[in-house]
Picture 1: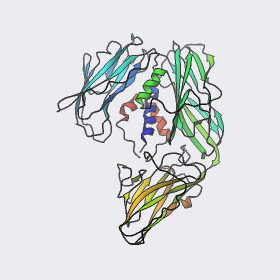
Picture 2: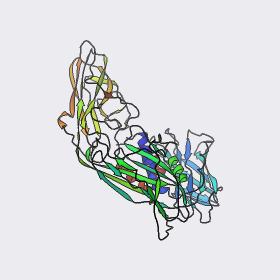
Picture 3: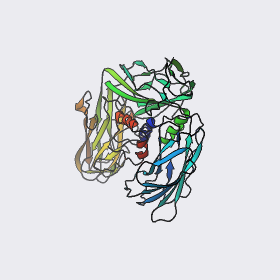
Amino acid sequence: MLTHSTRRWLAGLGVAGALVAASATPAFAAPAALAAPVENLDLYANNVIVAPGGTEKWLTLFSLTTERQPDDYTIKVDRSKVYGFADVESSGDNCTESGAILTCKVEDQDDDGSYLNLVSLVVRAKADAKPDQKGELSFTVTPDGKSGSASYSSTVEIGEGVDLTTNESLELKGAPGATLKAPFQVTNRGEVPAKDAVLYVVGADGLQPSKRYENCEYTEGPLHDFAFVCRFDTTIDENSSFRLDDSFGFTVPADSWAPNAFGGFSTWFTPADWDEYRSVAELPAKLGPNGTEGELKLEPVMNLRSRQTDVNPLDNSTWVDLQVTGDQRADVAARGATVTGDVGATVALTVGYVNNGPAAVNAGGGESPWIGTTVTLPKGVTAVRASENCFDSEDDGWEPGKPGARVYRCFVDGSIKKGEKVDYEFQVRIDQAGDQAGEVTLRTGHEETEIKDLNPANDTAQILVNGGGDGGQGGGDDGGSLPVTGQSTGLIVGLGALLLAAGVGGYLVAKRRRTRFVA
């Protein structure tokens, strides 16, 4: 399973390659609200901005509810207000057209509890379209066999096209603690100047910028991916290249597992395209606080000798590959517990692990471990409450904190540094007298690839329960433990898979709300 925040980054990367057609026009208005709720559909469709000669965009109508829905729908798409400047077509064979009206049938939708993709459309600017032309695309959804309908509208806008391009890859190498220059570059191969630019960078925690700038926003919190966005008040003339000034770079965390490999991804946007991308990817209006260490600037590199007008939807993104050199690992040790109490009593049980260092764990990278914890309770007890970061190992639904299981799999978000402890807190009822034993077992690595820590011998610890005692409880060593709060993560997808999503463009976005990210 993924945290909601991680799903957002994944969904956002899926459209990175599809948002190249640029615009110098202002950001579009927010979509209209649902006019008449029917069957709790909670409709949503994204806005798009396209340019003549530029790439196509995807516009998708979703039902955001996870409640059970009727199997069949009829959807009317009114294209009359955009017909003069944009072509809007169905991406499948379930629609028929009559003039400006598309009539689409949605049939046999499975009830998997996820968001419903009702219809996906492909939008292209007509050859004679002019910047600033704008109109609404209207949807009317009628559940078959039901009375009433629901409505929604989104905006199709024509922008002035530019073609921002960049290097395909950037390879970095350094030991823990090293600062590495990262000369991100952008070129305008279009026929008109690009007014201002936005750089978006997302990657594993190992890709931490060496400085935090006033014109950049940075994410905060225990994410396994890190993101920032920088805005530049710079006009990039046609056939000109700019790059970040020499002050920019990444610093490899001093406690990074080594050797290791971190991946990242950067994309250049026009301001209008960034607004569109942020909306589709469900990113907040502000990623996080701005930095305070001066302004990051763009510096001119060169003027090109020849002009190119080709628009490539993937040529404004850079893959970042950071190789961490050296030999630095960690020892994680399981922490069991001993509890006593009368038969029928409910007592606290706290288990987990401690990172003895020197490297951090749960910090990402292809060669460092994600720490998974299996908690096997003794047969003579019942879990009446479980940690929200623990899941019944036999429950395919991955319901967090589900009581009554005997074997739990537990995960926690965020980097665990040397000396830090992770606690998983349970309340268990003692059902029988006498000594009973369970265990805590750590998995250091991924599901299919084991990554051994420095001392595998301490990756298992006992859980001892004595029924029939005088009450009381014990939780093992609990000093300095990290609180386990917030949304649980389950199994975290590797950054490599996250980045591969970028290549599928708008199609992934069209499908993303119906995808269930499970292990």
